[in-house]
Image (cartoon, rainbow, N blue to C red; front, side, top):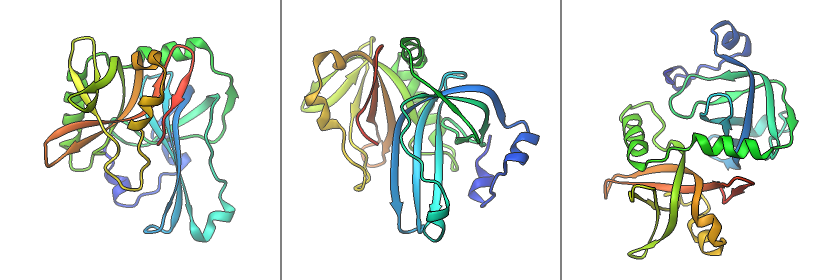
Length: 233
């Protein structure tokens, strides 16, 4: 499960991944967020999708890299709102949110059962969620900003800070990404109807503030029993 091969520059090939058993058959995935960005430092465009795997409950990533010099020859990825039915899902070595890819997929319209299934994957207690995140970020090679689905009882303002609260009364501070290039999402909660602020599921990206030693949650997507509300990414 180590990502050391990728850090050393190894490019995994489909045949190699299949031979090593790094494949899941007949998977279904739902995209929760999508972002297309320009990376001048690496001289490439990067399209990243955040997906939840309906087969194994994990939040996984797709990444499409298009170097400037070959951008015209590589197909640009876009947001997907259907359920992706994938015969062969190739899973890269990774930790909490591994990268995945596929060669072919067939779309189908999402159903209420899919939203309910996604909601059932959400962690209902913030304490075990934070413990799992802290355990991961201790590893030097691990992603320091993991993604997770959390069930919340309510979201509101406490002491002038936006927080989410679980059924036990534990709270997490919601905060925008520390990156200056990432769009903020916290201000959008003031525009949402009350039903979105209680008893829903939220996709968050965790950030550890090294100065305050506080674990912060960046809100990305709300999942209700009837829809997926993308706040941003």
